[in-house]
Image 1 (cartoon, one colour):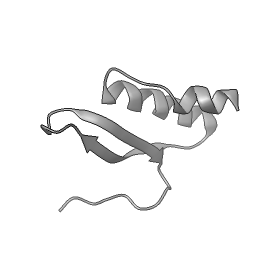
Image 2 (image 1 turned 180 degrees about the horizontal axis):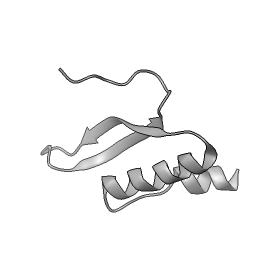
Image 3 (image 1 turned 90 degrees about the horizontal axis):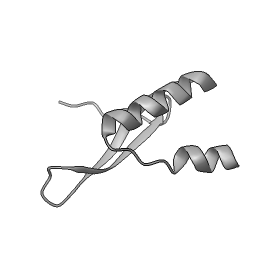
Image 4 (image 1 turned 90 degrees about the vertical axis):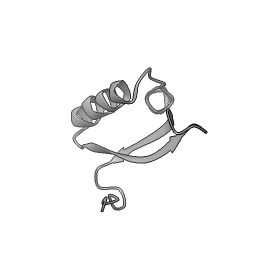
Length: 64
């Protein structure tokens, strides 16, 4: 349980730093990740929340 809490509660200075961490972690565990839900601040300048999920979770949103 300690590993889970330690991994999912991390905060990062940038989206790229977080994605790199979780991608490396996932590869060590035998799976991969992808970027999912994003939430912006009121001015739409800064990401305040980004979900990084297992690459097989749900469906990837396809941009048109």
